[in-house]
Image (tube, rainbow, N blue to C red):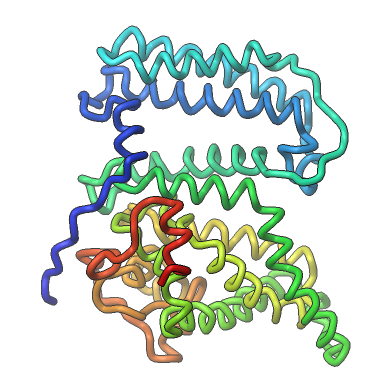
Length: 382
């Protein structure tokens, strides 16, 4: 195989600003205050946002999740987060020559306390729209706690740090896709529901919800992957569609958050066309919810910076090495499946060299601008 030299990743102005804040140029080994500062800032900012959620649940929580929270348990977790954020930020201030990281954490801790801390009253009232700050906090905490330690322990690329070039752009995509989840769900479900209501009456003999739940979930995954395969392949092959999907491929370095880099048009079209056959067939809501969890985990796992692959199993289920080859600079237009790689075998787009990982990921020539707002506008300008 010809060795492809990966291009030098571009840093955005937000990357550089974050690097200055985090003191990234200083030593980062254990005992320098680096990790305590990161953890302190993470907990402090999260605590402040959680206090805001308590104040304005009608604006900052999803309608699906808001009624399900055990409030007293959440208060206890918030109190622990504030105390831990203060402690780790203080350790950073004591140990690290650059105090910016720790001081920023202490400021957010103080803001959380002044906002009411864990004793904050739960607000009420009606709102014209909702943004999912609660959904963002739950996902960022859960995913970061799982995948960041794994990427540090079992890295595919050892020289790739947590805050690699472009991480701020991907972080913005992660934030937007979670806080605006209700809005995107509306635009995704609206056409799919209309089509399903029109067609499902003609398929009234289908009752997939009578199947055992495990079998039904497998059927959901199969139908969804077949639909998503052709939508995904279409984004690669149709001239006007490719620039929207090229945003996702513009990441030069993959990790747990890189999969969030998706243009809103890509998200709505892909999810809408994938959901349509599922709603038409009439799968149960329980099976669809289980599938949504599976695809969320698998979409994150497939982009991780972890040397993880299981020979034999990688022929049956999509694992990170298979999807990394989808992001390879060369060859292009391979490995479109999300769940089952044998679908690519069936349609002639399978590519998985034995033991090899792609030497470079991204797009040849690097045509996509690195900043978030420019990326949103770029497909339309083309």
